[in-house]
Image (cartoon, rainbow, N blue to C red):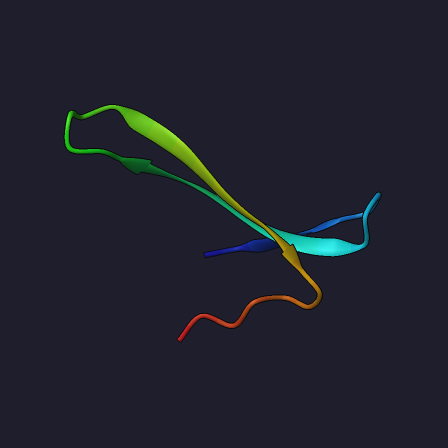
Length: 40
């Protein structure tokens, strides 16, 4: 999952799409990381 830097705020965020149980595509964003998140 890629992480991007918000240049205006100086924080990191992750953004991705997933398909919910009805088949609809939904965009999900996690914001406010001080450093790039490490996914394990």
